[in-house]
Length: 219
Image (cartoon, helix red, strand yellow):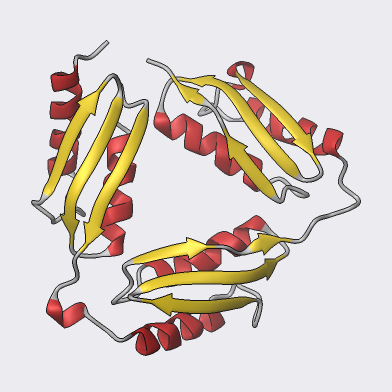
């Protein structure tokens, strides 16, 4: 197992190696597998990317992401302009049903509300607005319509079969529970990426309205 200093060094080196991260103001600390990212980044994309990059380093079991978005002056926009751009982006995205998502912007932070039929639509709506100029963060509060024809047993079986089909997720280490469209994942995996992948597979299953990912990363 890596020492705290070794893990800190590896995460910092990975951030420095990733060309899409331009900020030189990201600090890394590590303790018992928990990595904390602090500092500032110039846009929301780099905030998300920094967490993604840190999560792919071996030995990372949890991430505390405390980065702040500090926009350059030329990227600052009013909430009204951001809201209009977000509405346009949603309207132009082929995967987002028209007029299903409502937008609220406060101090550059975008909140999405409304109801979607499928998880891919919820995800597409978030992707449509998260990289717009001036956006400092996104809260995706879109909900999914429950599907009464899908039973808890069917949801559980579908997710377990999906895990078995992929080489990324170790299906034998994950316990799936489902009730009224709500899925809970427990168990252990060997990487942060594997935990995220398991959550994504669960979300994409028809009939799922929420996912609680309690999987523990061990190393």
